Image (cartoon, rainbow, N blue to C red):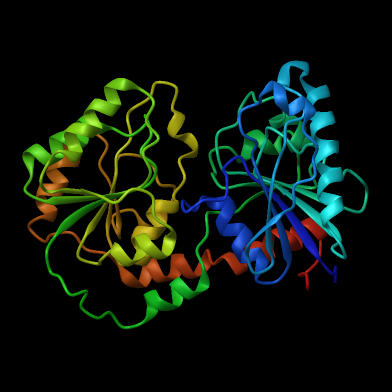
Length: 370
């Protein structure tokens, strides 16, 4: 079996209290391997041309070092800029490696790091978790990677046409949360019904629908996530929502923080705007998994891509009127969650299982060891 020492994880999202898929994988991988997490760069400035790449990597967790990617040159020169920046950053990382040996570059970022550690020994995994169509490096990363991992069945054929070694791996969950889910339920200390909206507050969220929900039902709403709004109309709508007395907004929380707030008596909701271009094609089911692992049923107006749990814990109601009608029924205690089916699903997407599948596929072996 292949012995793995160090894995580089590239990310278009920085290391932060908000745990995107990239951070989950980095933490899970670090339980066995050394991990170097590459933060995306800050906005390019002219002074970048004169800065030396001598910054040290920051240790954020046991076996995890974070390195801030530095854009020496702007993107004006296209792939030449990518080549220069990648090679300079690779050189800077090598200065900090000491006795570590890079074995895998795990790409979650299609904007940079294409030229990182390109040799026949080091494996490259392109993990597609967001919609990157028409990005300059998307097709190139796909074609030049040893394995392409997609989380959505809707795009598997698209990437398989460019790389036959494309596999479908769903979003995951840590094994300790699965274990906790399987334990006998105890009362959460509250029997009050409440709605929970988990996730980043972007311009893709349907704020008018949420206002209708608050106007037409008597349920409280707990909002967990960072404000990432850019459109002024949506900023005003969100302000209207947070002005409701029955609304609590926590801001961004780490997984341990937001999971502690979720209760089995609550209803997890997902509410996105309809889009003619169908930008929901790769909407991450991470928030769905977070709801389910706490024993909460889920109401969604998009396809969560977990067909085995539709009407068994996940309830799809796409028209706004049906969405609100469902919430009103939920207030009458008519909605349930099939714990047996949910446990079977959660147990099948443990990170340790998913990572073993990916690495085994990468090395064409039964498994890998540290």
